[in-house]
Image 1: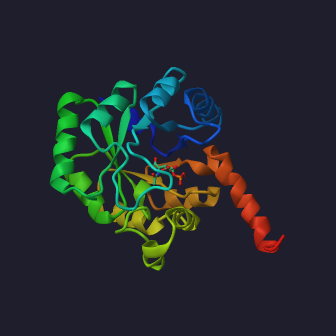
Image 2: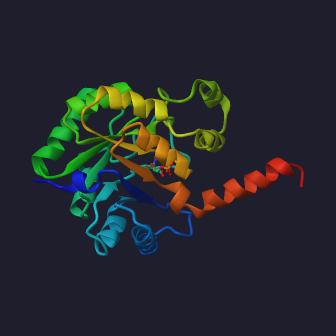
Length: 255
Ligand SMILES: CC(=O)N[C@H](C=O)[C@@H](O)[C@H](O)[C@H](O)COP(=O)(O)O
């Protein structure tokens, strides 16, 4: 029996990711980041791209959620599927040593039937792999459960057009993508989606996305989720620094 999900029950997964342009980009840095997270008590690691997953696999037996961002731009597009969008991208992270495959399961530019076929193909070649569906709405969660995934995750809440906060929807038509991305990041985690998923699906739920405070971890857990994933608040020093800088700027805006 696969015990990975039992191991992750009520645990913290730390997302260790860095992208081109970040001084922490590259497997050596991300491996060290994962080591720090493990020292701090993380129950699992989320990592992107095969080289990084291999580097982290070599230092731990803890569960790894592997993703493969393809055609990824920073800022991320509201309309484009970039988290493990194809069979080939999935195969790469599974073969690199991931225990759970994280994949976008939103119907953006494709149908639920396309996603189902992709999952069937992955299951055919890798019957042991667990699948975490990164999604943004309850409907997507229900569909993902029907397709037989193992975990639903709120990863993409707020980052898709159908889940974008209404006050930001209009801004998305004229605002520069980087600015919009910053505004999205200022939003709190989507507890409403967590609660709605808890009422609607029977499979495991991972709370992920914009969790910056320990209180928010408690709130998410109180929604009845099985595990919580935190990324930027732990592993992106640039973003952490700018939060502090912005705080000063609210007091002295013109300095
Ligand atoms: C939307 C998207 O592409 N999210 C990505 C998924 O892997 C990562 O950029 C996030 O850092 C991760 O989900 C953790 O979230 P947060 O960094 O907010 O704790």
